[in-house]
Length: 454
Image (cartoon, rainbow, N blue to C red; front, side):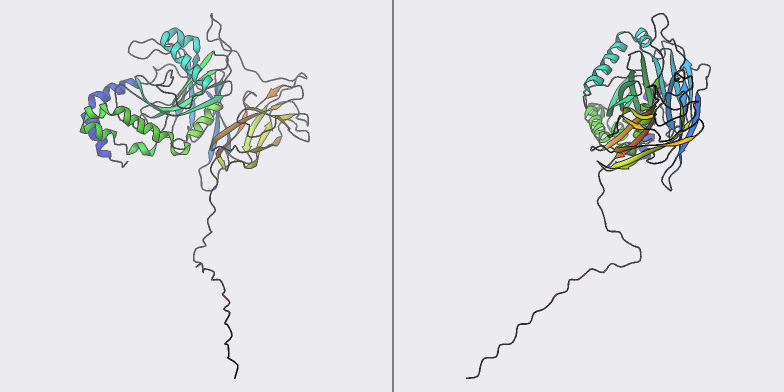
């Protein structure tokens, strides 16, 4: 598929009426007074020489928290949106909205994460919302690889789901869901990077809260897609062949690795896996009641809490061949008031275990408050190719489990990619001519036979 910018310009001009109609479908959420999220720069993650340094940030608002990196946004801003039932716009429940500043791609789709009470969307959406929730619950329960038909989606984009690809079942800290790629439109339309997006649709384990993420992505293969050319040449034929066209693009995207997209799908998956929704199950009288999250206290009255300092080994997205043994080491700081002793344990929390033991001794010495500690665990990369992420916390001697700042309940993790083993090739030194080794041959000359004299 070769890029042809002129065909996009021609298609857009000749179909201006359609574009205007579609453009109205992607209006952002109605403006409300802005509330700034509690975002904190966590630490700089070491990267291989020559690559841009990646910084990890933490977003926390209304008992919803997650990590994101500087490759995705320079700042995530949160705000609370009241319920809206404007006839000119899709109905929206009361929700927390996280918006991404300086997102890495330009798109007509606004990058955001929405979190809202399930009951509120049921009240607004009625039968439609209930059906979507049932479809999502069925998918999570059965985990069918490539189910037919449209995938469940709440608060993604208006109009019709034109395509879906890259389905994965991804759990977050206290819930589960699906992620996939999609495009929406009001009629059969060429698939294009300007409206391609990654979406996560998930629900908390207690069924009380829903998360809907819409994050634009691009793929170089869609830059040269010939859909606009086909549409301009023969609109009727394009529409009649549309199912085959969509099927072809979906199959192509399904075969692409996560790093073929911008941003990397693995980084989006990692962010969604870190999501924690700490809201209490809403009561019928107060469907959005929010409790205050507190740090876990030990019986002695001191507090247990850590702060992430750095990835000492195996930074995020390190690649390993299948079955490789490696040691993951984090540097953590004791920011609580309890002293960590040899009775404290590192414990596997959730995600991909990668052979991690259930518990590992945290330290062989005493670690007083405001001191750093390197914490390690021996792991093994899975046999199947893909992206894997495991989450860990710590356990105090009294059995209380705690994590890292800012509220002492967030996990820290290991994130790796499993890739096929590379084929060894001879090392070529510039300027050195390789001379082939010629085997030495020993020639055996038979003796000359002289007939005896008569």
